[in-house]
Length: 317
Image 1 (cartoon, helix red, strand yellow):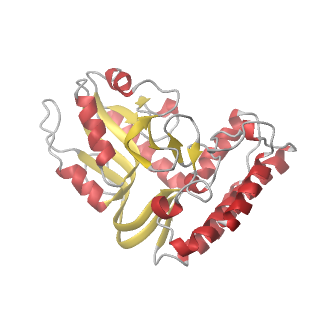
Image 2 (tube, one colour; image 1 turned 45 degrees about the horizontal axis):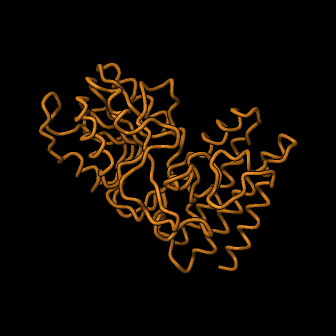
């Protein structure tokens, strides 16, 4: 893996890949510990991934799962090098790095309207300060941005420009996963900002020439922290599965496979929460779920029961 600022990736992949960034084995244990529960064993997540990988490999020529521990380790090394270079490290991602491991965060997320249609401009995460207040808090800083993926490059470019208005200059960008077109767009963008390099130094732990799609693993698991796209006026999510979200549009799943794919995702999620219940000897209710799903009751209904109802709706779709 190269050092941040070198402009080169740790690993390079040619050809078209369907890329999944693993993260549930970080997010689920973190949530469990936060409410005093024991998480599933590490091997349990491997079983879930094996089923998902087998399914995706029947749809796409090349399927690549990038390990969560590999991503976390690589990002931590990059953070250390950025800090050694005197940069303020600001994270745009929420899965891999703890608050204490970076100097701050910019809290943005993908949002949709009530019909599940994308709202093009990233919105502020629920409970976070307004975007201009987040930028203002970084006034005068020389910044390295950390993100989980550079896909089109638009979010980073928008963030760099927004920070400049508050005299905070970005000198480097590190991402766990980079897609060639988006990375090149980012590298070639000329900002012409005084006190900032003409071109950003961009470093990716893994870079792909071309992708069918790149998806965060959590988006296939309703209710898991940070899963899905967020409803723009409430803190509820649209997971990337039927009957909630748009797996065809958001995860490039072929139309004829949408039902089978969604049932697999729901079955995996049911297995995950039943395992948490089994280990801890309790029931998990909808009111306890860290990422509420659009349309579900925030009450004492058992979450697994809600998922089974969703599964039946999916089969009738």
